[in-house]
Image (cartoon, rainbow, N blue to C red):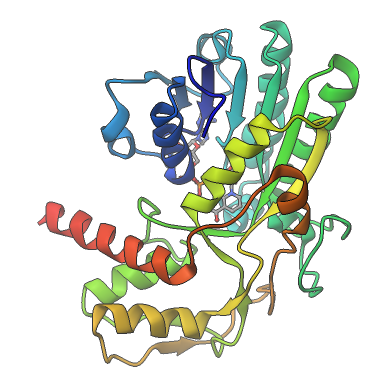
Length: 321
Ligand SMILES: NC(=O)c1ccc[n+]([C@@H]2O[C@H](COP(=O)([O-])OP(=O)(O)OC[C@H]3O[C@@H](n4cnc5c(N)ncnc54)[C@H](O)[C@@H]3O)[C@@H](O)[C@H]2O)c1
């Protein structure tokens, strides 16, 4: 994408799943990229392809000297670093609040101090809470049901405040269910697709909570990276507006597991466990605003994304043996 060549850009959380794909794309677009990451859930391996082309600052948003070093006069900051577990945030509310809410405020203040002109923030569809309205437009109210979701809503508000008070150009993107290579499997709450890929490639059945009829807007990470970059280049007001990012189409969990089993050639039946309390039945993004305003146009389908994810997981597992 044009407009990034020669620009100094900071990506917080750039060693994570989405952030590392963004770092790859920014380097390819000719940007001078700095990644700030404390490696709490991210991995240096994720940056292997660009490690010689970026500046890596290992540290937390909450460490003032590391934060100042990372922002380092950047023209654009993509803010993806976060405490990322919604269930975890209910058990560790202060930790989540500190990283996501206080951390975002510290970052915005540092951007003001260093005259960074733009911030693009990774918000979440979690801000809509357990609303069953589908598809969801940005006009739906924010009704967070976890400390994580509340912290994302707070982050959006903070961007708007810094825009209003200090003229920061700021955009929030509400990601739906992002998936792709480098997403981690393993915990009880890891993203469904990463967990399915892990199980199928180990020759085990996938585990589905409930009957599998619940639907989600699963979006390949490549599309999300495109939208992040478009948001950073948006010529509009950028006064803290929020946009949904998904495919704009929902698919059931059961259908996802079937497509993945077919790709792998597995005939194992899924194992069905009781539905998890609080899981919404249907979640789909209305992406009309991102299309119209930012020019976002998803290019990769769920099936293409699943093939790419499974191929990556297969290779990653092979290299562990
Ligand atoms: N994956 C999704 O489906 C999804 C959906 C909605 C929103 N999001 C948001 O997108 C962003 C990226 O998510 P992801 O899926 O890539 O998760 P991830 O865990 O892979 O990435 C988060 C990164 O932030 C880093 N980090 C955490 N705390 C930090 C701190 N205090 N200082 C510096 N770095 C810190 C982690 O080490 C990690 O590399 C997050 O803000 C997340 O809330 C993701």
